[in-house]
Length: 112
Image (tube, rainbow, N blue to C red):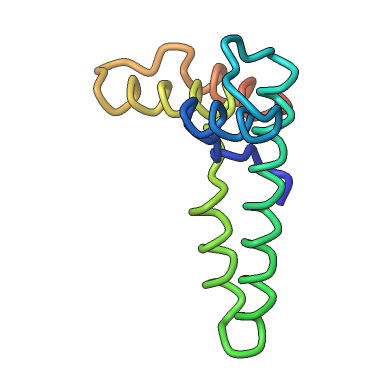
């Protein structure tokens, strides 16, 4: 579960949490407070997902659990993956392959 976590509480909820924490209205939310609250929300969501996957493990095929984890913690494609997809689009919609195979091989050798 090291993929990028898409869970971010809405600003209104962050505001409410800070008002509860500080015991009153908060006019300015510091970037530090915001990062801490977002990290806490993400940690809690990751723990819940982990517990759900562990609970499912006895009765559910591994590929379903992996699919659930991937769907709930999807990550955006890397720049390399985006470039390969763009190259495939060009190849599929172009009448020439001039240099495309070389570019594809070079991209595939790059780290993500």
